Amino acid sequence: MALENTKRSSKASGKKREPSKRKTPSSRRARASESKVLLGLEPSECHGILCALVDLHPELADEIEQIVTCSLLEKTFEEIADAVLLGITSLDLERVRMRCESNLFGYMEPGDVIMEMTGEALEPLVSDIGRCSAMGLDDAALLCCQGILLGLYRVEQEENWGLLDWMPEGMEFFVDGPILALKGTSRNARGRVCRLPQALKDFSREYLPEWPDLHGRKPRQGS
Figure (tube, helix red, strand yellow):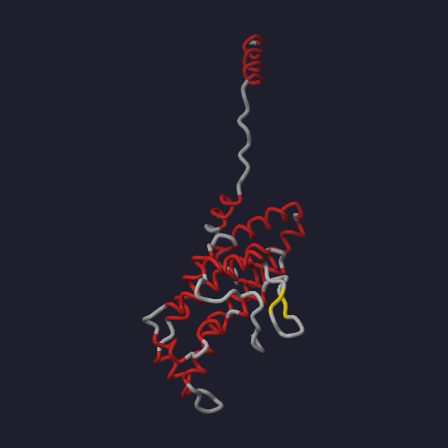
């Protein structure tokens, strides 16, 4: 009996232990997506809970930052451009007419309404540029800016969107907003964009061939 126990213990000690499988960020996201509690949280609640989690487990901070960065870089500038194109060209004359007639300060000209609604469609994406810059995610901010500019350019090339005829200055009117939201861009004493990232200048030359180089353009007030 003692001999048998000795054999069993020797076998047990000689058995190879399988390496522990560490959960990857993707596997954790998959598990989180199955949680009814997490899925039911509001965005404002998620922010507070995430901060509380980092306070309890500071070692998770780097991994959370990695997940955030990967999430913001998941979309390509082409996909962002498609979203801009769809968001703007989905505006139609009927919606413009309703806005013209429902203005509290009296009737608005269709051209002014189209400009206003186009700016509203771009606002969330332009805000994303500033948000990424504030977090130090300069690559994500640049990617978003490139996507917006390409989307505006494509709207200008869209022959079937008749509302463009109401906008004398076209989509170039809106390029200053996303550019100035980038970290490291500013206006000089003459009101012109300066210190534009080289990557953005190169991008404009390659993807926006029918627009002049954006470096040195004078931003419009309030953009």
